[in-house]
Image 1: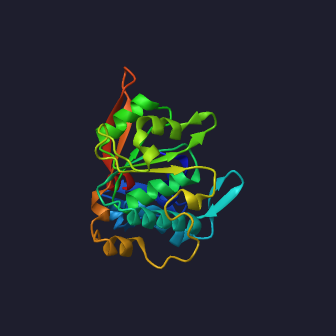
Image 2 (image 1 turned 45 degrees about the vertical axis):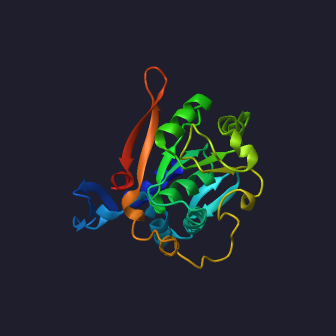
Image 3 (image 1 turned 90 degrees about the vertical axis):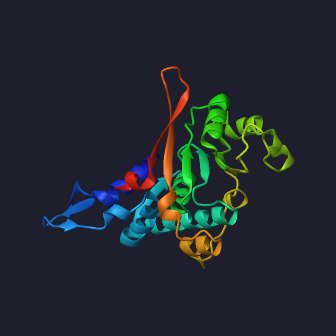
Amino acid sequence: MNSIAVIICGLLWNRSHHRSSRRSGNLRTGDGSWATGFRNITLGSLPERAARRWGAREALVFQGRRWSFAELSAGVDRLARGLIGLGVTPGEKIALWMVNRPEFIEAMFAVIKIGAVLVPINTRFRTDDVAYVLGQSDAATLIVAERSGPIDYLGMVRELVPSLAGGAVRESRFPNLRRVISVGDAPRARRFPGAGCRRPATRSVTTALADAGRGGRSRRRGALPVHVGDDAGSPRARCTTTRSSAT
């Protein structure tokens, strides 16, 4: 998991005036009492919760730019609405192949918030491993960083998905794959769904899901398959729910 995700989770559970301790999903507070209701919190809700508590405080610093918790949460929601607009549905598998950058944070939380299944791909993987992950996970969408230094990730994707050259994804080896979203260093409005919108949001993510006919399911569908290398170096999937990850 990306380091900023760990930081946000840590801020929520290990605030200085709390003594963090788990007992049936509850949190022990400083006066020794138990605060209930943490059992239903999912990873997708963490940026919004953090924004409500520490909105103007600094959440993320990257290459000289700074984001508050409120700005980070707004970015997550913009992307979530963008994915909904592209037709992403709760339960759908979304593969994320990206090095540490702000878009990773937005994508990770946005995918989980709308109830889709996040499939993070190790950035050390190359074409054969990525082909296995895309096929084994039944990913319908791939979000990829174009490149990192000398490594051309989008070039490898084009090698795996030659139909991209025609403007549509149609590959017999990846029958479920329908979308490839690339993230580069050019203006983000041209590449990331919803990222170019700087106007105040007129719809919440919940409303956007409801308008698309997918309301009421986002909190129950999320899962987090993680592909790890075995002794032979081949990736294998391990899966956990996003609810158990947050509690």
